[in-house]
Image 1 (tube, one colour):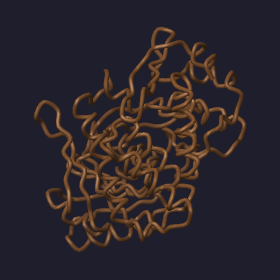
Image 2 (spheres, one colour):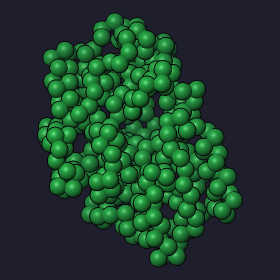
Image 3 (cartoon, helix red, strand yellow):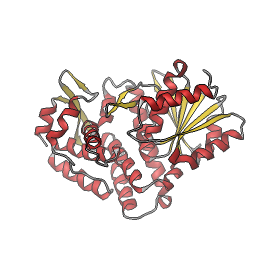
Length: 352
């Protein structure tokens, strides 16, 4: 392991983010734990096998189980299937559930672990860029409900998240681009000189540069983004204030995803986030929105609303961030400077 980021609350260690040379580093990361159960996205089987082999050599591997992953399958029933598997394979209160896969996998596995026997420990090996920079860090777990994103869940921290950029070399290009949206989002919130670096790197990869050829540069940016999120979570674990900034673009994005499922359109979470960030930028500064649009399109991301803005209103009114008839919208003053402003959905829609 090369780097460690700690998530702490008032001095108490909540979780760690570890940078690994490869999935085999799970043996060292999991050394303090006893028996380990691996649940994995069937699409990430090659990485799950490597993790299982590393743990089997230590004598701590208990069981390995695949799940089929999709937004449609991100339901309480899938969580119950994980609960049944844990119970039938003998997992007790001392078990560690290790999830190998993308954000849907880590969200569901973290939720399943949080409620199994009133809570067992869990950890993640995220295998997508989106999960490495966002979904697998911070403790948000849950499932979709009535086609609405993550409406049922809890905030509970993993023991650790092991980030291995080499797994991204086998990631489909579209999935990589979806993660690119969350990487750019993070540096719009807190730049640290990384936003333009990320735009340049992602543009090169979109233009044909291989991930393997830029792996070290990508690793540094991923870990910088993880550090941003870890810092925000340390200061506001339960999203009472600052953590709301991490929802930049997500009110629009979740509504876009909901409507796309209703109309059977194929739009990924990251694509919806990219579109949502451009929409959020339009609420304050059209010239900034134009710059962001150019940057995102260079990274291969969509930026135009796929539906009439008015059609998003019903889903936005059901957003988790809606309180008292208003939504906590995250708006952008400049790169590295975002703020929260409460407005009605109708007000926001009228500005698009």
